[in-house]
Length: 218
Ligand code: URA
Ligand code: SF4
Image 1 (tube, rainbow, N blue to C red):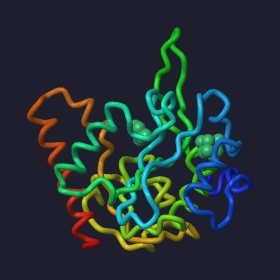
Image 2: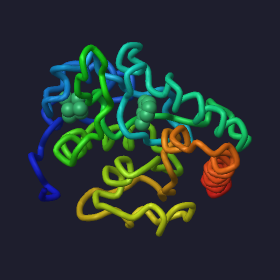
Image 3: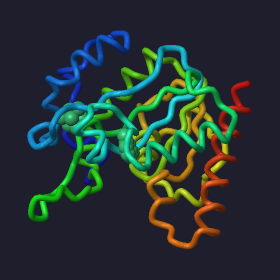
Image 4: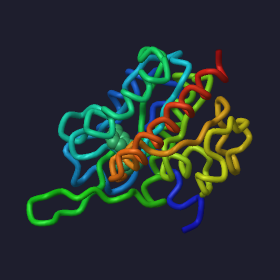
């Protein structure tokens, strides 16, 4: 799908130049793509303006959709553990998602997570851009492929760039970034690793990447 698919997406609902609390109040009204329709609620962000590290995930999961808070389920616990293990104080971290509504399909009564597509990532990016402006982070950490697609505005093989601090102009086109970007894996990828030694190694790699991001802005 083309990069500029369905622009402006959320633009009509994003208050210009607004602080985070105002963005949070406006987000439930967004109709920038169809995901609002089946989700329980919008899931915005957690954290304060001026937090030096902005962590961008994929989208809320089942638990996040029900609670209205990002990263409160199993992947969120892992991420919090990794932030702690990296020695980063939690109040220095602002966490958000590339897509603000939960995408799923029903299997019986179960809601099965579905990856957001470009047709959700692109329309939702105005919210992230507004967060860039309001939070003004010193570094943006993109967790996994969806976050990378949103933050950099293009598809990148994670293995090729992970752990490196990329300059703000690494983003495609007009999608200017407020800060350098560091790409790493999504914590939910760790949950799928069955071998305990492999999982520990993957967790340590995530911790190392988070520490590298924090060190880059010290
Ligand atoms: N995974 C994400 O990417 N974001 C969340 O908020 C929860 C799980
Ligand atoms: Fe708006 Fe993003 Fe929700 Fe789509 S996913 S309705 S663009 S907030």
